[in-house]
Amino acid sequence: MKPFPYDEFYPVFMEELKTIFSRFVEQNRDKKPYIFALTVREWMTSNDFECYHLDADGNTVVDFESQGMGSLAELDFRLGEWVAKREADGIPLDKETKRLRKFFGIASDALDYKYLVETWMNKTFTNNDFPKSDSMILAYITENEQNITDEEKYTEELTKFKTEFFDFLIKCLKQLRDEKYFESVYPERILIDFQVEEYYDNEEKMIHIFEELNTKEETKLFARFLYG
Image (cartoon, rainbow, N blue to C red):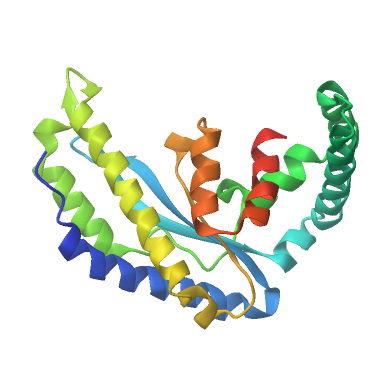
């Protein structure tokens, strides 16, 4: 595959990313946004080859509470503290932890809703929040169609491109975090994340990404969502 035009893509993408984040904050400021995430979704074109488009999503404290998840998440947090103390005392609790969380019925529901983009339903976002960026991605994929599949299997070249492209997007988010852009738009603390289906089975990768964009303490709570 030919090199992706990152130099041309960068300013276009960053402008659209800032626009959608600002819109999310402005339309939901009174609902207290607590997380914003960038995602890349797959779709098939009429030519039956794989392509990608960018999405953003986010959630607010009010929406979180309205789903009845706030108190459950707090209970889960306190349970986690109790478990951590027991483990610090040298008491193995792996089975007991699972039994307790199953009994309370909170680990999957409350924490999934807190962190997982598929569970949010914020009306700020659409399926076309990055039109210019998506157009450039589609043009690149179309130009390199012959390098994407080989006997109906995705090629190593496509896999390499996906990894490089995802890393580029994460670096862009980290740049904005380091430059305190998010704080300039929304002074309250907000979690930032990058989620793609390819990484859902790679817990270490997801935790590493989250830690790149947030604090260690915030990452510990996120890790609990992944590991239960």
